[in-house]
Length: 180
Image (cartoon, helix red, strand yellow):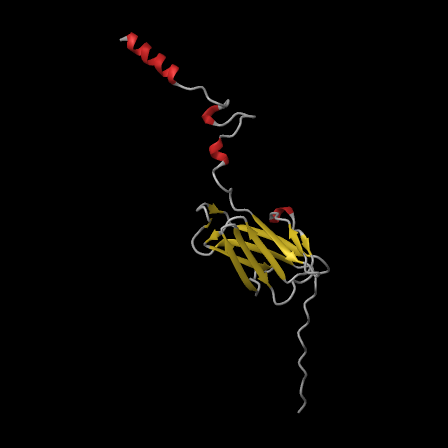
């Protein structure tokens, strides 16, 4: 019986091919190891976003995507924002909030293609100087949005601030007293 066990062990060892790349525990490629070809052909990565605004001369300027903890990038006053994603999105909504967390009134349009989403926000008046805004991309219904590959896409919050002195609110008009 020990001969059968030894023969089975010898066949098992002889029949196992050597790994093509050195690996650490759990099959994770070691540093400097080449990635398998299957991963390279897996298709597009996760959806990524870019945000731009229209300059007064009709050019477009990118707004850096930073978290709220990292500070807000400054932009020039604008009335048009363009959000782009690298993949089409399902079950999404895009909203622009002012610093009091009120949704801004806008005329929005979306163009979807297999190459991604172009979402244009057109505001009736330019954003106010010195004020803070946040663009939010989240799920329309339920708890998550997905990309065209069916993968879950996390909600995004893109904060920014309009450059310049903060505009003071206009005082309410005074009512004229009528004499009798």
